[in-house]
Image (cartoon, rainbow, N blue to C red; front, side):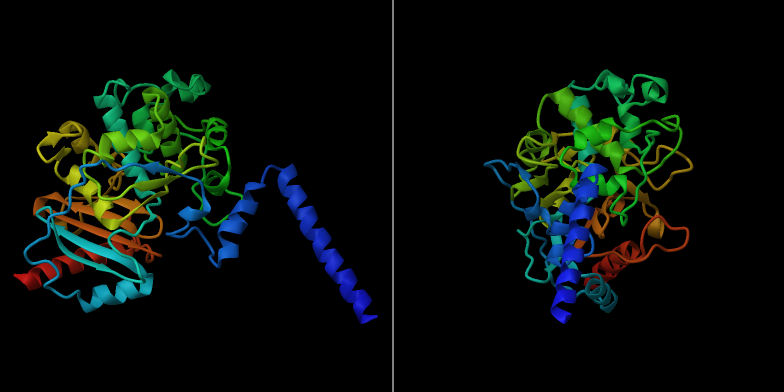
Length: 388
């Protein structure tokens, strides 16, 4: 009797699983199966910093003339503060680096990670895509920030869509119908992360607001912007990133950019460049130095200035692809990822702070950043003060 009941119970569970899988395919949610395989079946609850091997990737090639980072004369002569140590341990920091006067002043790696270890950029990639936009304008592939998206995709040639510009996409002011939700497997954000055809997902979006009026953070903006850049340059995004920045900046390692599907797929442009702290930091250095690297103007200075200041008075926390802060009365701009990935640039003091890790802290009331962001800055300054 018990064996019969157990057999019946197991058959019922198996049948239920099959029905659920079938329903996911019927209602076009089969991408969730990939999410289950990549996340839950690897012991995680959400996307994680070293998930790139579970996806198809395209290589962002470094050049033959890699350029080693200058090492500061005071490199690692000061210990990290107790507060920084506690924060790093609590949130799982795997890389923390301070760059002073364009030389590495301090760096530390944990959990077996090193200066060569790749981790997921998450939304720091949005800053990279904005840089590619600036380069595409500089190269003459795109006319200006004011060029209509409809010039590249007629799907957006009517109604609000006809008013949407490439600059609106970069500054998070598109008016696209997109809900930025990170926990629901049925959200558009989850679909974009796991769906095998991200181009169809983006081109199927509706317009719900007039573009160019206000800031509203949507990952779909960056993905559509990347599709514009891809079409304008007639190059894969990874290839254009390689020739435009990875090689000219002398990056020390190849990077990987996650794709939505097989090798012929599209880069997940709103996220997911796998690289290391030093190469991410060099990208921040380019913007800190107003688009100039080793005497070469790789990006127009005026574009860099525009990207790193607010576009809207009611959205002072965001420019074009970069997050902004006035913490400690400093003019700060940053690349930022969902799990506390940061490249923090403070030009007035010639400082860059890079942090990579497993999670971030809680948002403070009324603040645009989580508490850890401010701690990384404050403790870096304390360490620099201790050196002097």
